[in-house]
Image (cartoon, rainbow, N blue to C red; front, side, top):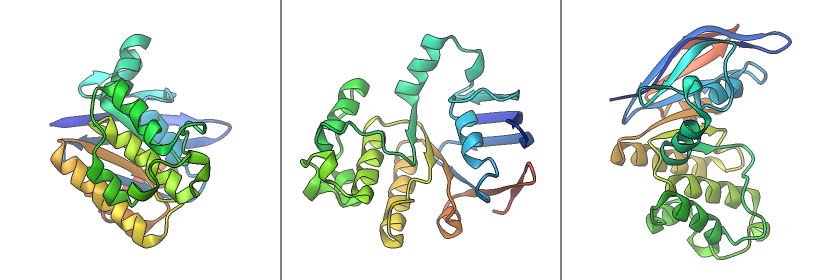
Length: 214
């Protein structure tokens, strides 16, 4: 089942970032986008995930043209079908880590998966205040929060940037297990080529074009 289909995407700011990009992704698949800083990787991810309308082209998520949806429909899709992991954690600072997960659980109607907490290595600190956690622990809490929603599409922007390599590998394995079990898919932006190669499809954004390298 196709979950994402993007056609002829182009975008620019003061200078062109990318042109005429076509991408598609099916359930149970993962895709990584790598490239130099400033190449437009994160911008492309924002376009694919409904956060930024492209200058031209279209994006379909779950068979719907997201930039033709009404605002209420788009908000509903983001809440129920899409999970986003950012470089910044955007956790509620006054809450404990567990309370952050509870918010996601209440909004989505799903339960917190204790196995995810174990896989992420945060079971022992989950009841501490967010401000008491290290950057890497906060990153893993933000990942757990996203998975609590049980999204069908995960968009992850440098989700392992604050983690050591061994922990990053464990996180990638959790993502892989999740998309296999939940008929989901993931688009990952990363500087880590070794981690990118764990995905089913790997693209490099270079000179405004996407080159498939796996």
